[in-house]
Image (cartoon, rainbow, N blue to C red; front, side):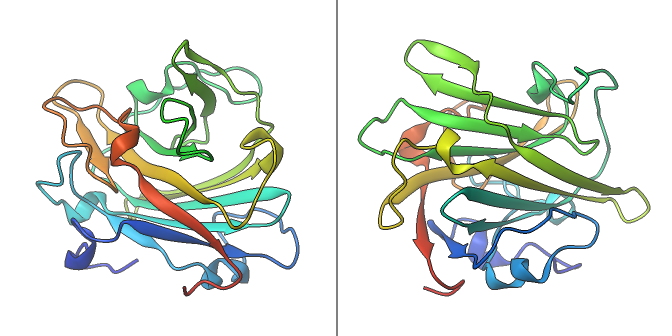
Length: 225
């Protein structure tokens, strides 16, 4: 990540992210990223859910890789302050994780089913939650995700890598399909909190559950379209 600013072309810019094909699965290591991540072109954001008030000190970069079996996500995050839950289930799952600092990915494999999508959250101390969102509400996805998180308090940065089984995201994976996605950050414990979005939802109050605002994710054999 640039250490100076949130690139202006991304403040209200890119609507697509490209997921780059892997030739093999690899081990997550947020502190020492695998070379494969360099094949993924990142999207960057640091503005709020309305696309306003850019804050470079809360910049986020997102990269995506894929294999036929796994979707890999990497969040590189800057932060001003930390607000964390100290308690979780033995496996690191934490209900209502969004009430503290998180990075989030909303993934929709079938844009024709506009109210159905998957939600993944990870915190700077490695807690997580995965949810299946539908018109009936939300339920635990039980995706079997793996994660690696690295927190550098001296640099005010944290990084999270997720490996999500593709079978938990879609019934029949088609690499020619275009998914709808959005990425978010939340920082803070009391309102007004900081709600940042890759693709602005433009709601009067902070709301990430706006599928019509999602961007597009294409699956390619290289990082560049």
